[in-house]
Amino acid sequence: MTRTSCDLKRFVIVVLLLLSGLVITTQRPAEASMNPPLVPLMLAGVSGTHTVYVVSTSNLFDSSHPSACGFGCYLLERTTDGGAHFKVLDLPRTSYLNDSLTGTLDQLVFANTSDGYALMGAGAPRSLYVTLNGGGSWHRENIASGTEILRFAATTSHVVAVVARCGSATPCTDFRLATSPLPADHWTLSPLANWPVGMGVGLGAFGSTIWLTQQTHSTVKLMTSHNLGVTFTERSAPRLGSVYACYMTATSDASLWAECPTGMASSFFYSSTGGLTWNIIPVRQFSNTGGGFFEPVSSSLAFLALGRSDSLGARNFYDVTNQGRSLTPAGKLPCNIVNGLVFTDPTHGFAACDELNSFASTILLKTSNGGATWSPATSFYSPI
Image 1 (cartoon, rainbow, N blue to C red):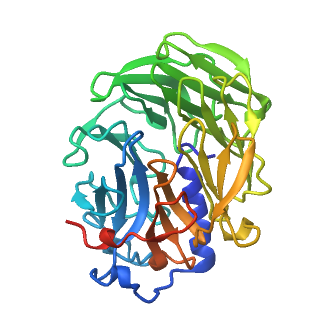
Image 2 (image 1 turned 90 degrees about the vertical axis):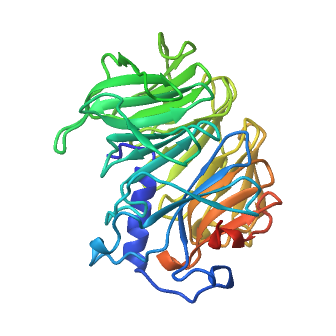
C-alpha cells in the first residue's frame, strides 16, 4: 500500500518508464543553452502568490549505473514573475533512486515565500528539512524519532503531519498527529487512538481546521477539528472510498477537493460544507497510468489534465467549476505524462510535460490563458 501523497505518482512514473524505455530525443530550441538540458521533475507553488518552485536535473539517469547520479544531480529553481526569470536556489542533499525521478526527495511544500519543507527518504519519508529563506538554505528538524511521515500539510500559520512507526515487513502502528508553528521546530504530538493498523490516512488543513480520513476495509470516516487537532468530530464519508486514502486539498475552512485512487483509476470530489456533503466531479475516465494530473487552484476552480490516453477529441485539459459539478474543456496540454502542474491564479500556470513517454523529452511549459495554449518556459533553461 502507498504511504505518502507522492507514492501513487511514483508508481505511475515507474510503470510508464518500464513500458516506454528511456529514449534520448532531439534537443529543443528552448534547451539549446543547456548541455545537457535541464529536465523538470517536480513543481511546487506558494498559495496566494506567483511564486513557483521547480525541481530539475541536468543528468539523464542511467538505471544500470545509479552512481552516475548522486549528490548534485538535482537543482531547485524559483520564478516569481510568471516564468520570465528563474533563480537557482538550494536543495537538501538528494540522491538518485531507481524507482523515483526525484530520488530521495519525496515531497516539497511551501507555506509562504519564505517557509518551505522538503520530505526526504527512500520509500516513505523519515526526514524533514526546513528552509526559512525561500530555498536559500535548509536545515533538518525532527518530528518524532523512529517514525515515518505519512501525510504532511502546511497552512499560513502551522505545519501538520501524521506520523507512525512503520516496519519494512509490518504494518504501521502508533499513529500520531503532529502540529508545529511554521519554523517546524516545536512539535505537539497527539495519539490517534484506535487507528486501524496498516490502513490509510488522508490529511487536509486550512488555518486551524484539520481534516483526517480513516480508511478501513469496510468504512471511511472523516474527522474534523477546528482547534488544530485538540478535539475532533467524526462522521461517515462513504464517497471517499479508496484503495488507501484520498489526497485532500483544503482551499478554505469549508472547501475541500479530494482525489481518490480506486485501483487503476481515480475519482474526484468537492465539498463546500467542510466535508458534510460531497459533489462528484463528472470525469468519464481517469486512469492512474494515463499520465494525467489534478490541480485544485481555489475554492471555485480546479484543473484536470486527463492525459492523452483518456482524452476525447482535440482537448484534454479541463476547468472544474460550479462546486465540482461542471467539467469544461479548456485546451490541449501536449503531454503523454504530466509530472507536475501548478497554477498561481486562474490564468497563469506551469506543467512539467513529458511529451514522448521518455525522460529526455520532458519540458517545462507555461500558460497565461488558463490552459487554452501552452509554450516552453524558455527562461527556465538559462536561469540567473
